[in-house]
Length: 387
Image 1 (tube, helix red, strand yellow):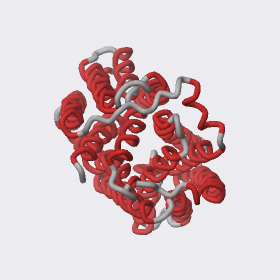
Image 2 (cartoon, one colour; image 1 turned 45 degrees about the horizontal axis):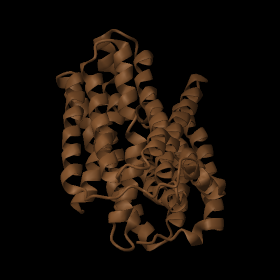
Image 3 (tube, rainbow, N blue to C red; image 1 turned 180 degrees about the horizontal axis):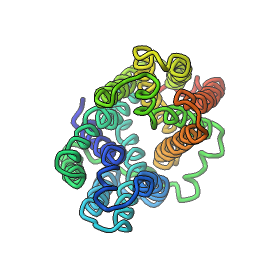
Image 4 (cartoon, rainbow, N blue to C red; image 1 turned 90 degrees about the horizontal axis):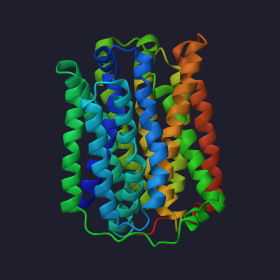
């Protein structure tokens, strides 16, 4: 992997730890500040709100900023947000820290995708984007379990102190390893939105939202699912989570390679079909420990198996608004996460068995298949990656 892509991957690793690490320390934070877990859970959604607000806002106002400079600014915001969260004692400042932490997330993926595509070797655009995204998958495989361990052994503030300090490594690696990349052509504020006049980017965003929502309807509740349905013990959950994280790493890597050899829209469609099949198998064979584990692996692999192809497709179909388009994928990703988790939780609230959380997941993912099929049918032949 090129050092420049490694620097971008370090950025997504830090963002992944900052976003998903909260799930591993939630109980410890609630105990420390003497609030209920549901109230502290708002810190998860506050991060997503920061992503949703920050991604389009930064993309719109940063169109004149050189991309390397923009990445450095985003790394600095990451440090400030996580530092505020780490040292704050009041609920209000903790919420503020989480919002600021999420603010650079989507814009970093947007700017990073553009930089990766410009630095990629000929015909290797999606592999380069997948290399950047790999940091997020490794964060789920290694970073989040490590952060959870730190929280249990030393306290949650040590986890986020590590995440904050890692931000200086992100800043330094971008400064030293990412070459100067000029700003995107300044087409003006309103013309950045011209690409949205075509159905193509909307189909990609809908596929992202529905596909991720489908996975998160199940993934958000993977621990009780594997415990109550598949019969795994609480002590098994750490390695089950790591196994799912390994699926994310492999899904991202393999789809990136295949998308460069074939059409990224076709690969994304195949992966989305795989997600639907995995959710169906999880529903039918939820009480078979081995089948549930394998199906869960492939479902988690699909989550990031569609990430790089969809990110690349949005870049190709957002001419004049590349930063806005690529950042929009992360907004759709986070909205999908929230929607999936809500629907899965609603099924549980209705008193259904945990395997029924895959039902809304299947419906959402099937909607993603339809969106990708429509895109591939109308625009797939035009979406071959050019290096």
